[in-house]
Image 1 (cartoon, helix red, strand yellow):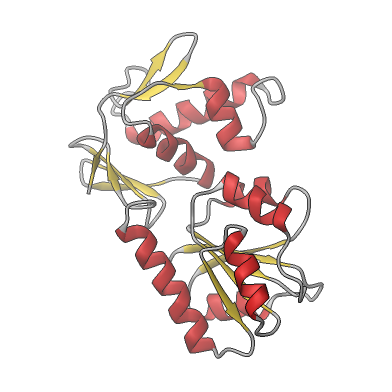
Image 2 (cartoon, rainbow, N blue to C red):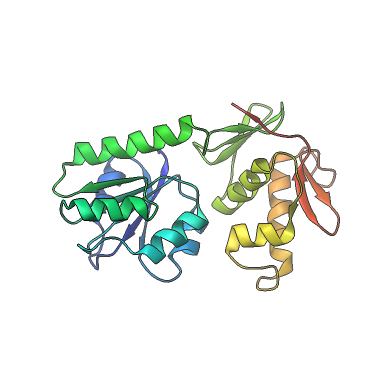
Length: 232
């Protein structure tokens, strides 16, 4: 299975043709219908790229693009219904990283997807991050490597660990983590939810989850990684 891609579709058909193409190319794909909560829904999937299948000739929804861009720092490729320079300019200025208009062949579409992800990883936005000599956070497979052993993470566990790695050893408050994971403050979700995810993550990456060496607690404030991450 290759990288994880979210397809945001404005169409009402059973499945976007772009979803079918990506799945045939062995990407892990989840399709979302454009709506008010699209940013939070896509973020929960933790994709490494977003494809916006736009059917409106006037351009993609500015609200949806802004919501998605605020939720995730991953490449966004807009695919339009027909070639129009105004459509392309509007999509790019609203936050898309690329815009491809129909008619376009499957090879070109897949090549553009690969190019966007390759460029994104090369510039380090979703590059693998080494958090210390024993722990590696791998953005390409949404997993962690502990002492040379790969550990599979759920999307939420991966997003949690990745956010802590991004902090470069600084404390990430509980409020920040609640907002990052669920798009809400800590008063809108069961306060034990974050504790549970932290403990489950520790069980996977710590030798002794009751005496953690990687994910440490700043009592009354939040969590942090024991060492600043080295980028590889």
